[in-house]
Image (cartoon, rainbow over all chains, first blue to last red; front, side, top):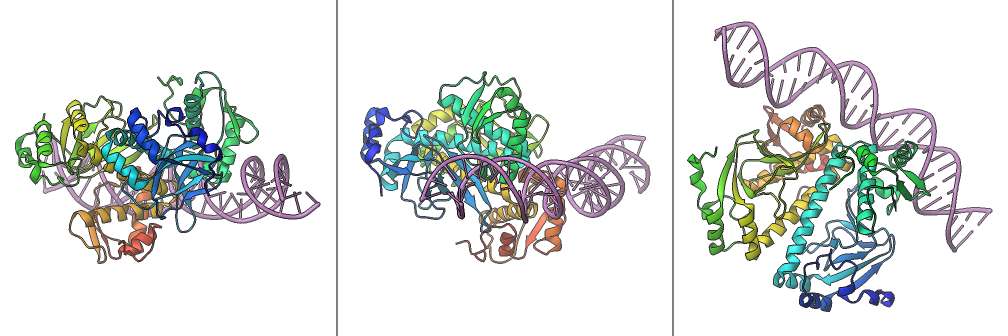
Length: 248
Length: 248
DNA sequence: CGGGGGGTTGATCTCCTTCAATCAACGTGG
DNA sequence: CCACGTTGATTGAAGGAGATCAACCCCCCG
């Protein structure tokens, strides 16, 4: 079930790519050692479901690489994405036994997992973990509220621009990019997933992406590779603060 | 500036109405004493702004009584409510110096406040506070995600029904009510505030409230007092799980 | 070659917004 | 006590942004 082959590469926490951003970020070496003893890796393929809403969930963990989505579904099939899980993001809630959302890997993904009980034990004994988790949760709450504004008040065009600028900004911070020149990146989501994120239909997403291309706010190579010649222009389209893109 | 008159009534933490739900819920008597030493009360009148987004914020605190809203505003004036602060809810973020949202009291309100520095000190020394804050933040995150589904995917009618059922449920848990018989409560929000919450215009809110009344999902006395004869019917209208309203 | 997943584009429809008039309740000052 | 302004709410008519339904394209893969 679990492929162990090339997972052993990331076995040492000190070399872990998310060492300084994940829930373990504040841990000292000794604390890291304790986590190392109870952690295990799981790998998921693109499209694979990590867990279904309502299912028993006896583990928590961090995304090490790849991308997953958190979605909610109504009985009649309408779905809304409520979170995008990027490397270092945390999955699962201490103190809850069942999953509240569907979690689906949209790319190949590796997670660093802990069984719930031992992790909760650690949390109680190690303030650094709880501190970091609080910090991360507050950040997620801010992101969720930002998204409420997008969902509730922005037009389709603004929604697309908002999503693109979020992805662009993340890519720029994660990989080396500067934000004043042109920025380019790959969309990690299908049109349908974008629609689920933005509360739109996939047709509207397609149309608005085309419109932004026609108006030269973005350029496309293939369907997925996006280049933004002028970031401040994109932010303007998103309806965000237009202080010239100087986001310092 | 601060009216001290009838605030002294709630001076003793042990008698505090939110003692077991607020950020201090897990504190032992001795810890409570320490908090008591640094707390102070602030009162706000209906309509008064507690703090503006972007302003310096040197305190945090809990809503003791009354209701406040958390809203985000775009430059062109569009606004989206991103949180509804009820008694026991926490305001402010440890580790951040400026407010991220506008906070406005919609009714007369009393807050139990702490200056930021002493509170953060306490948090570092008292795991019970940080634990409780994490728990509360995770709950808020769930609520925000629930709201993302409402904003992104529900119709106007479903949005109204969702808001009503949330308020009904809260009122039933806070005050004594059972959920199988008729439930009735006062709307703590104007039509405009409801619209800001739901990502609608106030006209649409008004129309849909009238429609729900016409269809006898609710009855109204005056503009603000709502009675729900059949809670499961309302939940059905909200597009939520229809397991007969047996929410056990 | 057929098929399917992902994407684009077009035509039509509809739900919600927009603009505007009206109303009830309330307070205030002449 | 009544005219007046204000605030919150309701209702109507018209228009538009996005949904819906449907055809079609492209590309990869078995």
